[in-house]
Image (cartoon, rainbow, N blue to C red; front, side):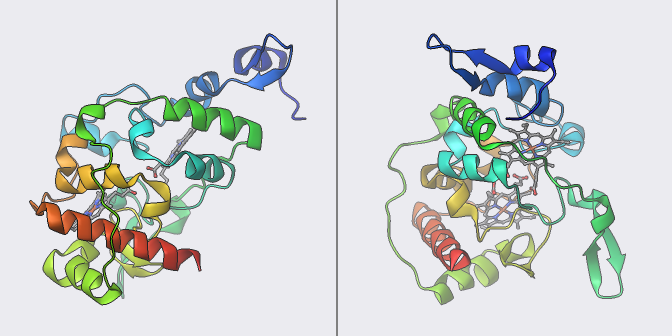
Length: 230
Ligand code: HEC
Ligand code: HEC
């Protein structure tokens, strides 16, 4: 068992009626995560606020993330945004083009298994913006790797900002070869249809994708995630 200062124990643990001490996810969020993550909303409303943002917004986590992924990742965090939250802070110009300045990147802190479980559960309770998601809006289907890549790269220019495999693609957005493991399919449909409805100032362009293209992109993202796991 972890050694915890008495005041911290009082803050972060709750005793159930059976007398079992369990981690209090909500208390951990407020004590250890609030300094970087926005837990209550709203999303940045100005460019200045966007640039100041230290970490992804978590106030609609329950509508965005897959619970099992959250619990795993919180115990063993990996890099998702190759150039951090705001790429300008972590990119330096090099002879071979822009490069990530690794010295400015800090690893994410990890939680114990019990704390991760409690925190993931508390995050999944955060259901802001349910008005933007329609349950079942993603209809499972398939696309070939080459058609998906053609859309992602040539037709819609997504590759400029996102990596489709480690080391291949743009650096300013999150890697997308793990996105289908991380995010709910119905969230992806909603976000790809109208990114600024979720995050008004985000620099991901609204390409006014047709509903059919949105579905194809989600098929493609799911295909990439399966390949990434192999
Ligand atoms: C020092 C600032 C900081 C603190 C404190 C912090 N985080 Fe983070 N967190 C980040 C950054 C930066 C990222 C983006 C990492 C990346 O993209 O590689 C992140 C990513 C995440 C993600 C993935 C979200 C996504 O959309 O990619 C989750 C979930 C998360 N943090 C939860 C937590 C929890 C829970 C705590 C508290 C136990 C916490 N964080 C504390 C900075 C922080
Ligand atoms: C100009 C850069 C840019 C372009 C072009 C772009 N995106 Fe993004 N994308 C972003 C940024 C920035 C985010 C949100 C970053 C964050 O959560 O920190 C994002 C988020 C995403 C997400 C959610 C990722 C996550 O982990 O939360 C997906 C999926 C995605 N984009 C797919 C696409 C697709 C498909 C296209 C092409 C139609 C595209 N993007 C074009 C910059 C871009």
